Every structure is written in structure tokens, then in C-alpha cells.
Length: 63
Image 1 (cartoon, rainbow, N blue to C red):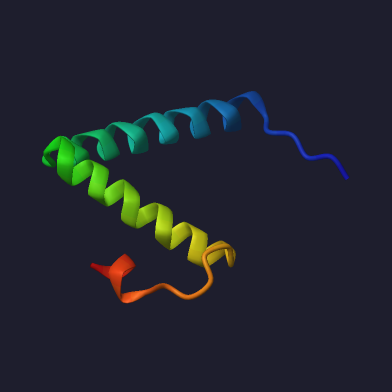
Image 2 (cartoon, one colour):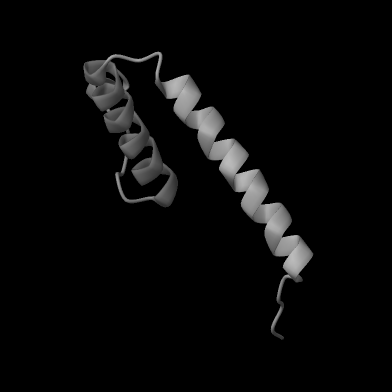
């Protein structure tokens, strides 16, 4: 089965994503570059663990 958004649905999703991304950027502006790099590292570890690719999370990975 193939599902497709209507033009109105696509416009709504595009608007929602734009608002979400702008809010994310606004929140991240509060962080210094070094803090953003650290946050990125922690999120990468977390995603690998959720995907089953990192094995056990070590104490070092948790900070």
C-alpha cells in the first residue's frame, strides 16, 4: 500500500518541521561550542545504545 500526503498535509508538515527546527536552534544557542560538542558526543553514545550498536554504556560514557 502506498500512502501519500495531500498538498495541504505536506504544507502542514513542512510548517511544523520549520517551527521545530527553529525552536531547536534557539535552545542550542545557549550552549558554548565546547558544550555542544560534548552534548553531541553524549547523544551519539545514547543513539548507538538505543540501536544496540554500542553494547553496554560504560561509566566513562555517562560522564
